[in-house]
Length: 420
Image 1: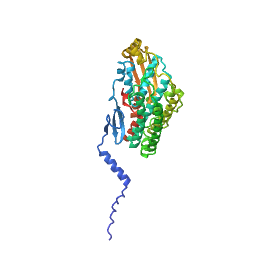
Image 2: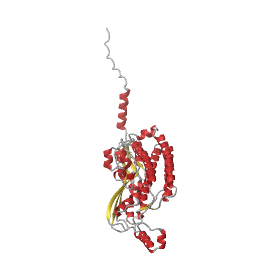
Image 3: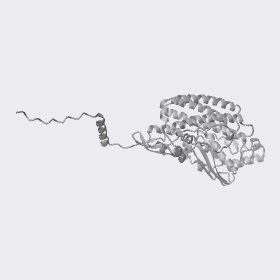
Image 4: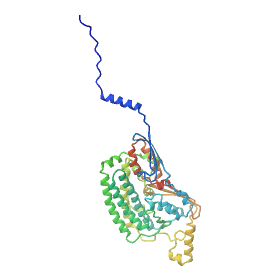
């Protein structure tokens, strides 16, 4: 008699490495205690241009929240200006964007002269254009060089600094100072061009052009640099306008706006130059904007040097400009005018004005109020860097921590003008 058959034992299923691994990871995630990380970048971090603190909340390497904290360089700029004469405000304006001090000088003076109803001599207008464009290049070289350095390119940084030093040498010869120039005066300028200075500027521009070709060759063909710049830090044209962007950051987002073209001042309407405009609004476009703007600045300076006429560099009005030294030492009228201008300041007519110029980072606006005395009643500066910095959380949240470095580089935050 045969034995009853035994039931077959169930055979184990073949392992599925994909589903098993996924289930294992899910189980680990369920039981693993994780929390978000909070880190401080700055205020002394080398990648945080200007003394600014960025409090970053991270989920892994993804930025959940970014909170810029300013105020470490606040100097009470506006109230300080209200306690000195109009001319004595100039050293304070130097220290707003210290990479382009002459642009701050001349922008403030332009607003004061508009309040007075004063037109400066033609030669002074040309020199202001030349000084502004030199300092625009100075500012852009700092930005381009630092961006290359913080993404691993030390050689481009050295080349950009070599080019920047050429400009600094020419600025020193012109103004007597390397960084904070105080070169402008209400009604014109402090002094005329030194002998042979124009020729030195042209030679410097030739050398700077060569150096920029090397910088571009090293960075724009570098895969690491391009991959970290293209498609990162994107800001649309609509958002850029909403945040109040101006300057190269706005134009990189595709908006064609430049104060020099929209509302020409000095002699910009006599000069032929293009305004570069980007398409994508990313870090790469903002970098390209500055390279192209330096080429346009080179062209503007060459044209201005060629067209500039001879003549005075400041108005001949002792109520506004200091009398010549022989008149001060030799006549009672000269010494009295000198004394009153130094002690009491220029008597600016009562009124208020807003005026702006195209600074290196965008529209630099001045709102001035005069009560008829030799000191400003109210000074307010619309610094281009403040709205640009305010958009950083919008740009960077949800992106990788590594993307914050090139983004902060290309917006070119300058602490002096943002915090005033």
